[in-house]
Length: 219
Image (cartoon, rainbow, N blue to C red; front, side, top):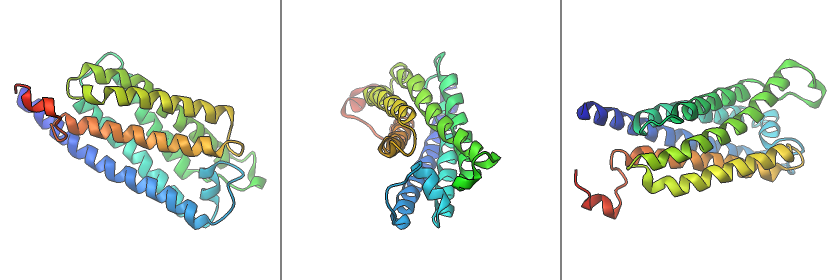
């Protein structure tokens, strides 16, 4: 049983590395889409504005990578994090976030004249759902880090990161796109940072990031 658990954790660590690549691609894609946009600050949401312009293909590809990163990371966490009663809910929320991001990527935000048509509506649903689900997943999973000895080292950062992501998401909901673009940018960065923390936790489950006290611990 111990051997099988180790095999699962090493497989999860490889999934986590793939997630890391996807997160980097997604973050770089959003950044370069903004640089290539070469316009004033967006009047609507950053994601929506970049998806409408010439950089739309890059924005959609970035969102697709972010969606896949959520789905892959959820399976890595499931194999590497010691399960508690709340972990399955956190994994479900993470997978739903991936689905919301996929909806955001597939459904074009449309033009101002397209208000009321289905695609922009679904785009908005995916937009708000993605941020709300990310905050919910982080708040649910962060306490579980304290129950796993390998994840314990990142537990304080995970707790702080989950609270920050929830606070930024709340700000984004109170000051919606167009009036609070910096809330959106900060929430995107916090979302990526939370995923990187989870990748670190999965990698630590196979001792890829040993700490000084790990060397003194038996086994």
